Image 1 (cartoon, one colour):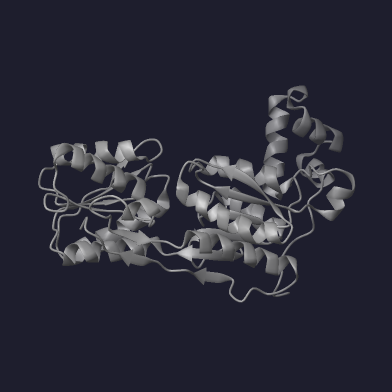
Image 2 (cartoon, rainbow, N blue to C red):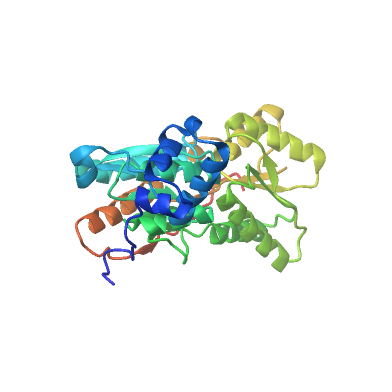
Length: 340
């Protein structure tokens, strides 16, 4: 097996799908392009064959279809979160300098939407793809493996990469922050985030925190999760909700800096002393963390570098080179400030 290319199978054709479904290629074409002209039962059968075989409809016409494109799809779970904006900027820095453009997909932490984005983007014959996270639906993972072109999974570090991987251990980040809080003497610690059931990287940080609390025999709580995207206002509301429901809480580890900064600003408005009454910590290391008073204790993640490394990994593979590392752990840094 070539070290610079993933194992691949023969490209699945429309004819293969037709034979698998027991229909004509024209029927398959109508089902894909004009579904209203095909019965629901037949559409379901053809859809099952498409998924089973990993067929990708090629949307690029003529010469472009044979040559591929210079557009790199980048799929992230949010475009409202500045964290992903910075990662995208890192990718663009490297890719654009090499003559490539980006095509963005936003899943809103929905794995079904992720599958739809992957399916659509592959149809445009990109030379490779960058996707946030390492946990996907089985059909998404199978589709990318069958595709056979370079794929970089970013934002987290793990051993089960589809192809290449760059990120950090969110579990270890959670352990690190919890160790800091416990060492400082905090004993009633809660974790607050948004859509934690879907945002499994935040869930990993909670699990890391939970392990440290268990080791020290401290009270362990389920994470508190809010619906919708995180923002400053929600962070402030979350602070007040927790202090009202659980007055003994003396430290809060927020899933990101947006929420944590909002909590600090609300605490100032309400006359709540931070960290004397409650310590506040975040994650990401946004610039705002150093501007509020007191400064926010947070985990610094190298977002721009993650994007740049992901782009370099793809470019190496495009050029037929083996990346220096197929899996890159960028690690993180605990930044201790006045909020804890």
